[in-house]
Structures are given as structure tokens and as C-alpha cells.
Amino acid sequence: MASAVAFASAILVIAPLALVFWHLLRNGASSVNLDFFTKLPKPVGEIGGGMVNAIVGSFELLALASAVGIPVGVLGGVYLAEYGSARGNAMLRFVADVLNGVPSITWGVVVYGLVVLPFKGFSAYAGGLALGLMMVPLIMRTTEEVLLLVPNGYREAALALGISRWRTIVNIVMKTASKGIVTATLLALARVAGETAPLLFTAFGNRFWNHSLHEPIAALPLQIFTYAISPYDDWHRQAWAGALVLLAGIFLINILVRFFTRERATQTS
Amino acid sequence: MALAINPAVISGEPGAVAAKMKPPSRFGDKAFETLALTMALVVVLLVFLVGWQLARGSSLAIQKFGFHFLTTSTWNPVTEKFGALPFIFGTAVSSLIALLLAVPLSIATAIYLTELAPLWIRQPITSLIEMLAAIPSVILGLWGIFVMIPWLRDYPFPFLKKLFGWTPFFSGPIYGVSMLAGGIIIAVMILPIITSVSREILRSVPNLQREAAYALGATRWEVTRIAVLSYAKKGLFGAVILGLGRALGETMAVTMVIGNTPQISASLFAPGYTLASVIANEFTEATTDIYLQALFEIALVLFGVTILANLLAQLLLRTIRGGAGSGGARAVQ
Image (cartoon, rainbow over all chains, first blue to last red):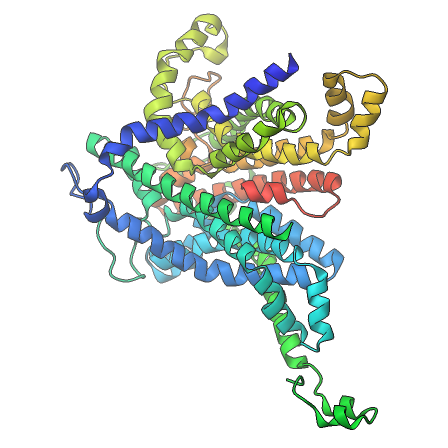
């Protein structure tokens, strides 16, 4: 009996996934056409147009976020895995885990005060920074875990050959763990690609192409939000299409990561 | 590097090799370690940065409203009277509803996946739950507006009203967008994280406990209840608090289904407003300085509350896991 209840709970937990996917496909699949990927948004009230600037904008923001998040996160993870004391590292891990729980909108508010106010404008830089700061604790912890999987024998052998410590870490340890570090980064990117709240008042959104990174920039999740809460049916249709494309992209990255990590497991076991 | 053929080695004199070989680069080692340390310390810096920015941006409002900010329920941008009580109420109630709905389901699912399910079904279900975790908040909100709300308005809500309309919790008109809808959508968002962390906690219960209970003649459910669950109580509580921390900060999906009305009402059918939603909706519309400062102060309150919840959760989780790390929590966030 308990098994039946527990099984029913498991089904209930998965149900929203199926429901969301089903409705996304039903409402959005017909609107995902060439127009969607190539046209700019039409003026308010007109039918048609696409979200090409939002898709490109999202990629630009992810690139900027990576420039901030990856170096800081990976090197921080290296420190946690290779250097430091047990006590100090435990504290750092604790801080990183707590930081992971900070709501994403808080990052938006902070970057607003840090970048938007002093430079007097919304910009792609601000949006990228907000997303990048979110990525730092995430990448730091996952990189650390991946580096700890590298057997100690590798480090000892390299040091015994007279290779300096930093070269051991960079050329031997990190190289061995490179697949893991890449997958950790991809997962963080997938996570951050769907974030809307931090972009609301940093990147701000744009109905046209932005011509420099100092200008406000469109992003796919932002566009979906704006269209979803609007009163126009055509915009609702496009919001569904955008959501389908965004979810497909995120799932694609997740499946890719799963595929890579599975291969690795069969090689080392 | 000193790996080429060295005449000193061939000559065989002791000490000659050591004299000829260069020591590994001390500067490179030191520099790299310092660089890595600096990057690791960034997380500490970030905590202080966030706190400082929020405090700085709300200093005037803190001065003007003081502690009453947390107890006043007026939110009037025109007369410039701001109070956070409706949002604190909204965040608290919607999170509570979400926990009431999500925790039993999550823990039951975690028990199913670790104790009761046939082995072949465990990985597929776990993968599906991880995919649910990957759905961005705004997409869930989109689904909430156009699918969930109309359905709630047409079927469950009138049903609840018929049964419980005489209580203050289900009174009033049914709009669809409501506190209850907000709670439900947050529940959907926190299901994966509570399930995955609970699963890890239950898996870390030593098998000896289960075997001892079986040896004493317990049934399968008794083993789960007595040996596993009571052992894992603290960790499961940590998982719940982690889910609470996530629920407190949920912004986009909530904004789209809760109705965004700063009012305090006993009815679950009434629209509400949360700390995160008011920031999302009104930040770019704030016309006066004091308005923006009040929103910064709301962000500060939200930051404080989520930090507290996450601190508590991490402390609880570390006592079960021995401080080696909270991998599951990190992975699903």
C-alpha cells in the first residue's frame, strides 16, 4: 500500500513536466517558423515578426557571463580542490553554497546599483555581469568536485618527475578533468540561460538590434515574459514559440552533458 | 626543463645532479596559488558586495521609515508611504502553501526512489525530475497564466468554494490569479530540489540500519519508517528548509500568477504580492528616489530572509553529510 502511495507521488511530481511540455508543443510548435528565427519584433499591435534579436541577445549575454563566471569559478574551484586548509576551505564551500541560494532578482538589483546607476544606462554589460556573478559559486563548486575525482597518483607522479606544482595542476590535473569542467560550465550556462529576473533592470530588453554592448539588449526569457503578460493574442502566440525554443535549447545542453558524463563513467570504471 | 640528458648524471658524481638541476619555479607556484586564492575569495567578497549595495541603495528609506517599514501595510507611491507588510505576508503565505503541497510529495517520491521502486525505474524517474528542475521560471509562469489559471478557475476553485466557502480561507470572488495559485506554482518549482536532496539524504543512511531492522522482524514499511526516516530526520528537515529558501526567492512564475495586489487577505482566492514580485514589477517604474529606495529595502529584506533560510539549511545538511559538500543541493539549483 505504501508503495502505491509513493508511486503515485512520483507520478504527481513528474506530471507538471509532461503537462508543460505538452502545452508548449501544442501552442508553440506551429509558431516556430523561419520568421521566428529571422525577423525582428513588429511594432505593438501588428501581427507577425520574430525574436531574432532576443535569440542573438541571449547568446551575447551568455558570452559576457562566461567571461566573468568561468575564470573566477574554475580558478576558485582549483583553489578549493588543490590548496588551502581543511577548515578554511570548509568555510569557503559554505559561503559558496549559501550564495547559490540567493534569489536571482537580488543579483539584478545589485548590478543595477553597481553598473546601471553609475553608467546611467541599461546595457548588455550589466546583464552579462549579473548572470556571470550568478555563475561563479555554481561553477566553483562543480569544478572542485570534478577535480577531486582525479586520482592523487597523477599529482604525485607529476611532482615526482620534478614538474612544478602549478604546472601539475594546469597541465595534468585540469587536463584530465577537462571534460568534467566543460560539462560543469555547460550546466551553469543552461541554468543561467533561462533566468529572467536579473535581466529585468540590467539588460532591460530591446525591440531592435543593439549596436553596442553599452546599449540595452533583448534576451529570450525577457521577451517571453514581456509578451506573456501583454494583452495581445499574437504576442501570446510568439511567447509560446519562444518558450518552446528556449526549453529545447536548455534540454539540448542537459542531454549533451548527460551523454558526455555517461561516456566518461564507462571509460574509467 | 631538466629532463634532457645531463652530463652530470653520466659522470656519476654524487651531488652533481642536484647542483645542475634547477628547482621548480617558486614564482610560478606562488603566483598561481595567489591567483586561485583570490578567485576563491570572490565568493566572500560577493556576499559583502550584495549586502553593501542593498544597504547603500536603501539608506534613505531605512532612515525615513525605520522599523515600521516591516509592520506597515500601506504601499502608496503617490503619497510616498511605503510598508513591506503585504509583501512579507504574501511571501510567507505562498511559501507555506508551497511547502505544504511539495514536501509530502517530494519526500514520498524520495522514499519511493531509494527504498521501494524496482531498480530499472529509478534512473528514468530521477532523470525526469532533473529535467523538471531545468525548466526556467518564466516558462512555468507562461504555462501558469494560460493553462493552469483558467483550469483552476473553472474546476478546483469553485469546488473548494462549495466545500469550504464558509471558512474565511476560501471566501470571496474567484479571479483565478490568487495566493493559492502562487503557492501551487512555487510548489511545482521546489519539488525537484526537495526530492533530489532528500534522495541523497536517504541514500546516505547506512545499510546496517536497514539490515538491523529487518533482522528484528520489521516489515518493509516499518524498516523505512523506523530505521531510515528517523535516522534521516535532520537531513530531511534541511532539505525542506532548502526548498523554503528557493520558494522565498521565486520571482517570475509567481509574478505571473499571483495577481500582484498589495493587500493582506485571509482568503486564498484573493490576489497577493510577494517581496520578489514587487521588485520585479515596480523597479523600472519607480518614479521617485524614495520609491526606488523602498524597493531596495524590500530587496534587502528578501536577501536577509533567504540568507537565513539557506544558512539554516546548509548547517542541517552538513551535520548529516559530514561537511564533505552539499552536491545534490548545488546540482539541482
